[in-house]
Length: 314
View 1 (cartoon, rainbow, N blue to C red):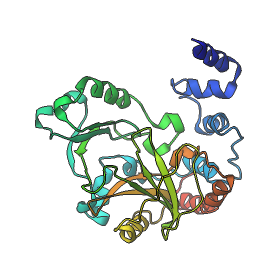
View 2 (cartoon, one colour):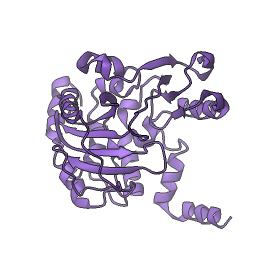
View 3 (spheres, rainbow, N blue to C red):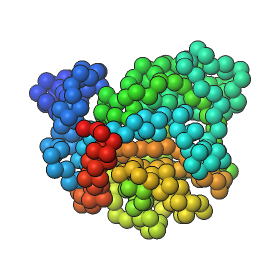
């Protein structure tokens, strides 16, 4: 009761806290992107957002949300449509197998699904349900979660433009297991104009025990840390397919000022995970501000402005 009262009064008297709370209830959906992002940035980062002359990585990600509207990005964040794109560039063997694609939960024939599977929404981040045992699978809870995310337009929460017009669907994929480790690691490559500069390795992406470590492109650990992740107890070893990951990340990010290209290595084989255009939605709590500045220097907004001019954009 005391905690609820504390939050109630904080919502009344703290403008930034109030904005964060109300933004989760579609109150500000009609607000234009620039105004919304300035308010959101102030509420989350506790500092003003400089869009006229952005310097940091977080600031430039916000700038890209407003100014880099390549139509191809919509397909690249669609968890189903992107598979065709990946197949054409690096091959079908690097795609997690699709079991089915559905417009609604009611379309799914659970009798035809395998013992284990992964269910997620194609149009957002977070709408995922993992089934490790179909005999004990709580279909009711899964339906509630998936239907909740199907109704949500992920674009509005962080104004991540590529998600705005992705068709909401349900994709069911093969449950991937590694015979040598219980936790499958994510290898996330920060690409700038088609070149990998840094990456981070993370574990426990869908649990409360998330951990993370940044590396340079030669897999040397660096002292970049996020306050919202704990560090590994032991540094994860370099994956066998690391050089191939670098090659494919640079191939897939060619011509894009900044995108993160994510992979898995499962039983020694490389699989594409996803494209991420705005890591942490541009609200990354870096432990050291110097990394926010250092990564920010790698994004050249003049390149984006030139491409926009060539495409006839604003």
